[in-house]
Image (tube, rainbow, N blue to C red; front, top):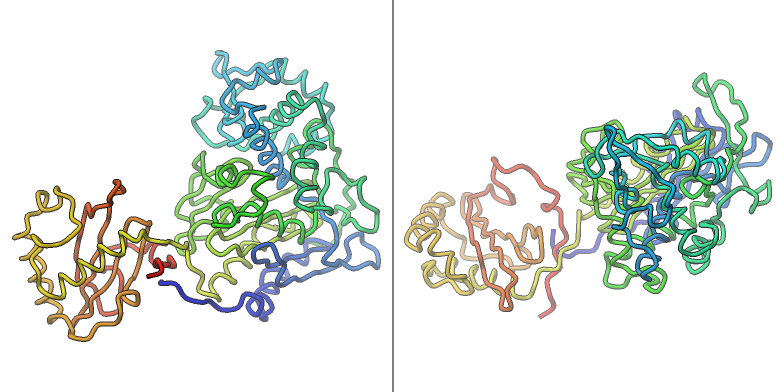
Length: 508
């Protein structure tokens, strides 16, 4: 997919079926109130609301505040990295340098936990969602006693993914240790205020009652609801006590996502490189898994405070859910386009991840979204065009320009010429008239490689070059294959997200 305009997102987001299909009967049935919004680069482009957030006559609006629960962890992670960048925290030091009372053991032996391991959910501390949900309001003293009394690891540190709220909460204590201030205040001053997230806060007390969605539970598939009081916000609040709106989360998603662009937002708030760290998988998560709701995910992992999926069609998707008794929340965005979806419901049966996942997938399909945007080096394009010309003029491989010395040592020129001659015969020879080179590009997985086609009479010849990034980049491999007319892959090659990259060529 070469550089090209795509359909207007606003029209897609407003089209019948995208948000309505996501916020379906099932979702509406099991939560008294809900909202789903499609956004692009921080701007909400389409929104659907449903129900009554407090069970009275008031209706859900775009500004209704919902609890976002574990989505709070992305704010904690960003704050930790900001302090790391300032030299106040060392993520690879034992956490006991900041929280001395932590005692951890695995199979009877003392274990060392670091901020990096804790933040990426590979510390060895076991999954603890059910327990933590009802202990979110525990005091700092209570949690300190818990860790001082020895915690048992369910795996050796650094070996497997296990979602540990307790583990990540230790980063909150580390923040307090190095700043001398409550972690919630540090997050507000580091992130919320500079980014203008005025409707995002820790704890319900910062909002008027008529701004908030109350929590509810259902045990009969939505036939009845029981009011669920807000669980407390104590020592574990930094991992799950935040509230927000769809507009504020849209801004937050793009602040994080823009780090991959040439013009990242607010670099003074958190370095783009640090935001990219958050969105790089550090701990692999097995797929398929129920947490991916049947989506075609090739790989997945946990970064710092965020999940990262590699969709087989659309490439990188970054996401995080939030769930507590009475609430279900989810945010997810597509790295290549900056398109995201936010979904909130005031029941833990709502299934915000499914709602947001459905909506984002529908939007990306409707606009035929690229899986990534790749800008090949000028040297890559120059080498590809030169070899394209050589093939069209029947020049021997011995005369190809830009080749590293080993290329013709690995496969001699005479062998390459014979193979190419057979392939050209198979496709019935090249057509005299060929579209411009830019129109014949079919893929570029990285900036150092490019694939393109030459049209034949019965089929096409596909050529691929890969360069090595030395001071003067050289072609380290060149290959040819016969593909069906108009295709980019042979029948034996599996599809790849790279087939849908938007390739942006350097300007002449």
